[in-house]
Length: 237
Image (cartoon, rainbow, N blue to C red; front, side):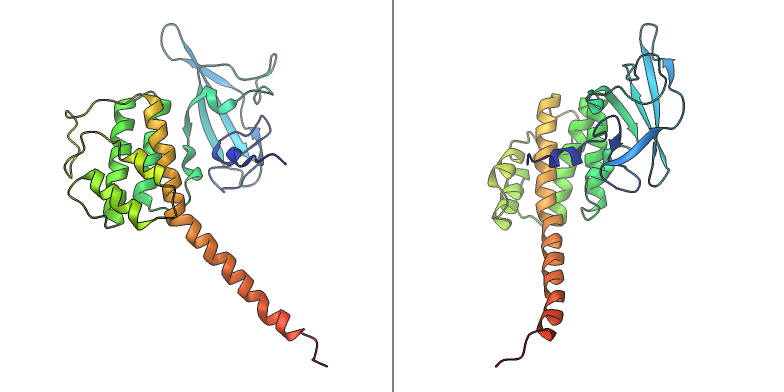
């Protein structure tokens, strides 16, 4: 069967189910909570507002798009066969739920802000958030080194089981030579660079903070099965 785990990273899976940012359920049904609304973004552009209610927790999220994503002759829901996420430029809540809560809050908040800036095309702000998140990670992990590149290399050595190329990507961060972000000292990245750093960083965070805990939980579960199995072991002949 085809691997579809990438759908867990989306807000809307299709026009019927989504990944709820409130109750954190995946592939849960949703409904359009109110009739579609729109307003004038400027003299020449409309912005459409969608209110989406989770069928599980009943909480409502808001989503903005420059496109009319509703079916013809309807003011409810989204058209079928549309990559909804690609047309939504701002959501409340943001896609915060895709970053596991076991990742430290300061890193989740910075990455979430970076992703929000990218959607709004605020690339300078997104760049600063990504750089700051890498800096905070090196602090949390007590990475050693006189500059960012050395600290990232220290993390790479500390976690040999993580794909080293992910750390090599982060090492390409430019002009971060001190413990502060000097806003006038570095060039703005474009969205492709920012997305590359965000996805690389999220994978590193998953392998540092999430995967070990999942492995421990699986191990504890297996160990919990042993007593029951041993009690039912047939007597030796």
